Image (tube, rainbow over all chains, first blue to last red; front, top):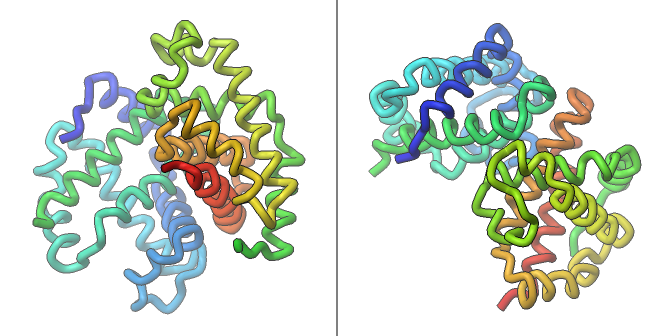
Length: 144
Length: 147
């Protein structure tokens, strides 16, 4: 369990309001970076025709992932419930090694830093990092 | 031995030649102390680290951030033998400073994020990969002399 204080939740919600409208771009950039900087993550996408940064499947997947994260932020008081079916998907079907959740989180933070240099302060950074860690944990719950 | 392509060498050289050490050094260390508060354990003598604002305005933190960033200059000048270059610093961090080597990665992640914030979209995925490779080699070298 990651303890999210009221301050953490409010900080992330406020920052996410600034992020609104750019989710697709953020998701696409984060996945692109993940595949480039951590090539071992490509193994999960061997069925894609094109794994280059900004390609069609990367863009689509980035949008999917970011939409799920945004949804989780809106349901931040019950991440386990909000991510139940996604956890089952990742555990039983996709079988993504949970270590990779940290990798994607890191790349999301890098993207947020490049796109919102003035808003992504250390205080916002720590709150977002905690929430992403909580999301990752909720996503891992059905694994074993 | 770690191999560096010409492209990678020039990416690293460019990043550091355009870096304002006095700005980025403090920012990276401040961010590390705030995002990973347990790292404050090594800076008990630095005075007021009670909250984010105090850390951000602490002159000793700033000075130390600059020093640490300049520590990367050694790797920059000896990219083909980073391991040997950091042997002495590795012993220092292990024997004298007693820094948990996991912390090197935490600081390097914060530095990546600060540099990303500075460079914006110019910090492309390829450049990020090269920068992280460089930092990973330094981190590994710094952890080598621990026993």
